[in-house]
Length: 573
Image (cartoon, rainbow, N blue to C red; front, side):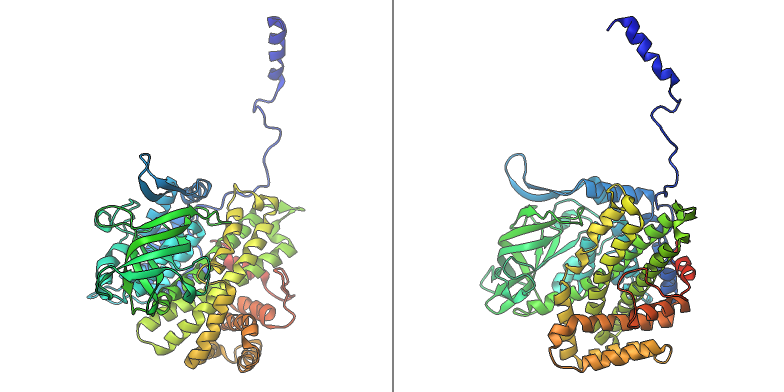
């Protein structure tokens, strides 16, 4: 082609629009849901904070609310999930190091959350010699609720660190050494022993290939490192773990068999000389969701550890930690639901179809109002159990029984309901919700996980049955809690009557336990809504969750429900 012909061709673009490639103006798209305060803008959360008298934590909660809803954290969450953890089994010289490399975004997210005390506030709020601060577990639960709206992946190591304290306190000498370290609010990702770091996190590792949830079938073994045996003596541990959560942690709670039965042990991630403890990371799990967080398979090869609690009573010792991790999953699932609902409301307010905003379309309004009811009920349920943990710590026996039976109920139900809420919220976005550039696809992949961690549905439901059988006072505490709202709504009264009749039926109780737990969760939620929520919210819940003609899908609210009031209550201010 000659130069003059080519020059004439280049003159054609002069006729193009000045904005280059644009063929149209981008319109009718919602904006990113950032820049608000996820605490102060949440009416329900601030009401709970006021009711539970945690004004002492208000400034910290407001700071966390600003942080998790910021565009900066949204970008960090995106990057941490896009650039997933990598295993470095060896250094470049061939030395075995078993380290995990994370994107810098992960470490920044962890630093922010640890600085807020998301892992530690319940234990550090009331130090000896200081004025008692009420609702410490409620306040820490709110930090978890908020961070589950920011990035769920970091909430696993934070939650395990929080819940490890009761297990650690089974051995006072170990607690004196390790507790200040893991409760530090100075995040330090350095792969090094405790004395070289400013703070650390805890992992929990129970599950094995052949055993799953049957912890008594654990094959990992522990033997005294010396001729002596006991809590203060070192043990050497050999075996494998099929799900080894947060392998980058500084400390691990694990199960192993001794000649006296399953026992609970505390293992440091690194030894005093700076070498890795004798655990080898075989590979990282390629999970469906929770991509930013590392989960692994490992083998113990003479790993050093110390006994927690009594030898042969390891499952009981591990449950001291498991009860709080289950509470944290109930809280986290409610937080995840809240984020999904908020995204759906924001999108529906910013998107128009058929000459109306989506939020003004009758059917969309019905769907979103129905989800808002679910989220409020899940949130009230989770924080009622958090308050019971506080009351139990103060010596309230009834609260202790309520914690025992109510925590697995809340874990079971909130972890079941979060999946449907997130799916429906994603569907509110249409195709935009299914694209990885936005947050909904990540929330969708995240939603089922809490229902699996620390006991899948069947395991947790059976734990409710076990609590009812072994602790009759737990059932009485539960019924007493529900009956506080007796007489306020006939639908609740009938629901409690049905539940009590169901609990008295002995036949095939194990096969029916999911239905029993569902009834227990819904009746407790109804009681809480009647006591604490606006009439429109409680009335809609009772009409759709307690009455027999309730819809099996979101968007089935009957006529007469004040949907606008429900949505306005759930909408970010």
